[in-house]
Length: 329
Image (tube, rainbow, N blue to C red; front, side, top):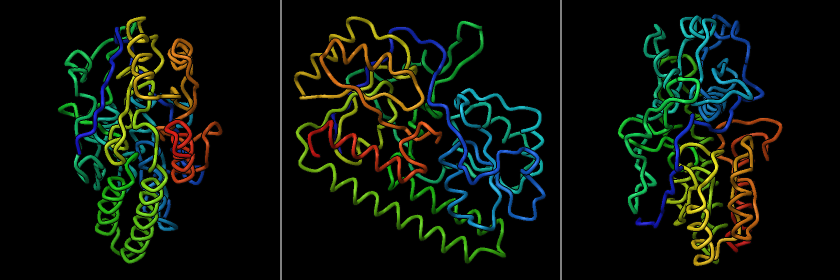
């Protein structure tokens, strides 16, 4: 599907800033509970992985997330406790390329079962049309403190946000289920049953999203940074990202003008920002263009500010926000 999708990168790259993410409320956040619990112990890198582990593992698993509520995920520093955690756990579930420090820690750990979600579906490059893709300078940079930062592209510039496409997320779920079955064969039948249930719910969500986004007045939506590439491609939409890396950096006057022109030409009504990130950038663009602002949640974490208690509830909230913005409500 050739969907028009332009990325408007930030004029100056600062430290990577993205949604802080958290664990499931049902997950253990106590590092001491990461291993030897009498269950199949799983350390998950961040919320979308923890959610899969909980849904597929059910009562047989104990899930601990490396990324706690309120933490910035992409440059998460792994503590000594968490390093020890990885040595005690039965499995580690992560998405390689999203959190470089997590990748390194899991790679160096002795955990027997390492499940990389990036290998369980096909990753694609998004935001590269019209010459606006992430350049080499975006893949590694330094913040004001001299610390090296990273884009949240995977190796080769691939977009890691697969969980925002229910079809791709279902593919990942299938792979995680098979890995659990192999690693903990005593409960394989339950893992298979739970996986089938989850995949069924994700397929239903896909159907709901497709039906809910039909008969829209415009295909274009503006976000503070590029997270919804897979989502846009799945449902024939076009994501206009203000910034590729940093959702909180101020756009230049030229970029605001370009977005204002795009909004006028494409009937855009809303600039979306993320739940846990400042809406300053969205307000800057919206104010100049005479547009509204609203939340479109990349679902990298669940906190009390989220519009829903889990993946499915937040995705349904995203659908309602998009229906209003695109004129399909």
